[in-house]
Amino acid sequence: GHSTTGTLSSANDNTALGVSALDAVTSGTGNTSLGGRSLTALTDGHNNTAVGSVAGFVIAGGSSNSCVGQYSGGNITTGDNNTAIGKSASYRQQTGDNNTAVGKDALEGTGNDSHDNNTGVGMDALTVITTGDGNVALGYQAGNNITTGSGNVVIGNADVSSATGDDQLSISDGEDGS
Image (cartoon, rainbow, N blue to C red):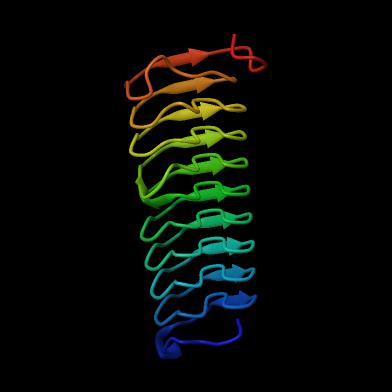
């Protein structure tokens, strides 16, 4: 990074490359930040990895998050054990743990979201999730209508019948939602 605002006396084993990357760290250890403004708010989180412009931008105290792609995990503040791979994956998730988003806009959310234990694989998978937990969506636009529902499983380009319902199963051919 270009400057450090933190006190590095207790921050160890951190690596940063990019303007303002990892520039607020005070006591965090084992963090890797590659890309302008990636992990720029991190102060005391541990073992986070951010690769891409603005990846993990506001993670302050979260630990063991992996954000790869522009804006991925961009608004996570204190969540732990999240994986976001792809542009804007888990972008609006603010808190929440153990989520996996793979694909552009997967688990992107709608704003200030808090959810746990979700898996979205595919572009736009679970893209409007806000507080639903334990959902699994595999495929392009899979489960892209789920907001607060929990325990749903969607395979293929399909929605569930209720965006707020729990324990729903939907399987389609993956092409047109049928």
